[in-house]
Length: 188
Image (cartoon, rainbow, N blue to C red; front, side, top):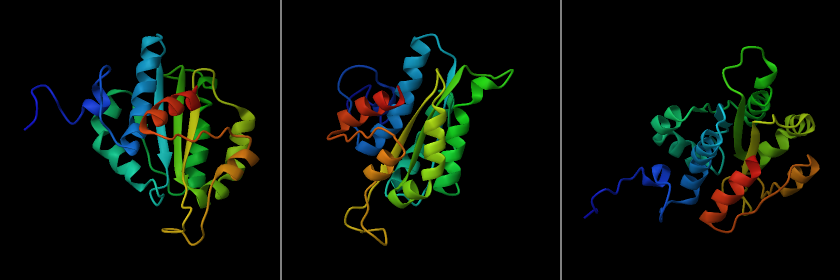
């Protein structure tokens, strides 16, 4: 029996009190919360999420699909990449929106996701994007799904070394609450 006023969308829409969600759902909420922060600050921003559906974070894109109406209403676009490289390059492009005359938004925050071999494959895009920096009203969060036991990959892998090589800070959340806090800190 559900209590009156409680919905499954609370994990994304509720702004105070206790909210129950999984780690993957927290990744979706990062984008929603970032947009809320920007609106509260009077900023005209948008969000863009892209990545590889074959990632160990594969259910991330399923959750993004379930939240499609909320994301669209919040000015957040989810566009899966054909591969990690193209997704990373698309995210990099979002940081250049303010350079275009007549841009509809002052900035775009981006979230990239992929598996560890995709982090390796996207090293060139990561290094160049990180060297270019993010837009002053943008920001990017890269989320890697590692497979330390090679359960779904041909080799055991982890992404920290590739991120360090691209001079991208690494954050390791230990709880769902950390996912939310670290994710927003990463975009900032």
